[in-house]
Image 1: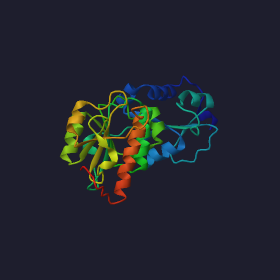
Image 2 (image 1 turned 120 degrees about the vertical axis):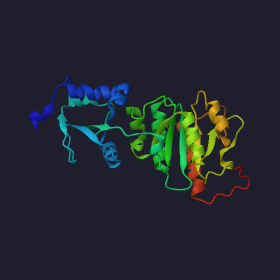
Image 3 (image 1 turned 180 degrees about the horizontal axis):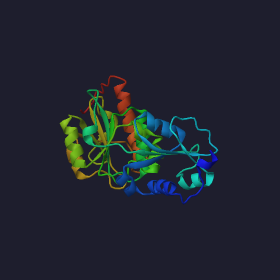
Image 4 (image 1 turned 90 degrees about the vertical axis):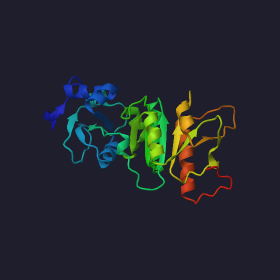
Length: 266
């Protein structure tokens, strides 16, 4: 195996992986992204992604079915975006994330919509929650971050691979939801009611904005209802991933129990 080990950090294939890690423009141009870690790569493959290249640290014990390229520890450290990834890195092909690719297999899908969420870590955390709660789709509107950003993949623990994700404009998303007769609940502090007063057992879209500016007016106008999470302390907002998790699991609670709130507003 020794003669098949890449030992130079200047190797063209190694520099390509580093560039894919760092440049969203290159990921979009080539339709490729990087996955690190045994668990994430196995999940990626199980979800139907095609692996283009596989790099394994030459001291690691690899027993997978894909022919790997072995690298030295110095080369691996050059490629790796994070620590403790079991000495394995893959390059994979991206998938389409169009609205037309979304398919709902039940009458009451639960959809999470995120408008202009900037931080990859927040989006990744939301995808991790969406995976845990079996959310039917996450739609990223007017995206300011790249779905295959390394921080997003890491924060999602691979949830980005298994949760149906679409990226589009807010206008197209609103038309899509209304065409599917999915009720739009926008999370906002103004002109809103406590989230637990609404029936989320029907087809529902939970729409979240950024902590700094909230949702745009077009979403507020398109909403069937405005909901809020009560803020009982001095601060007036939560991290968007925390807020989304609260609302998702309220919907899960209601769907696991026939919801009949006496003051249900929808």
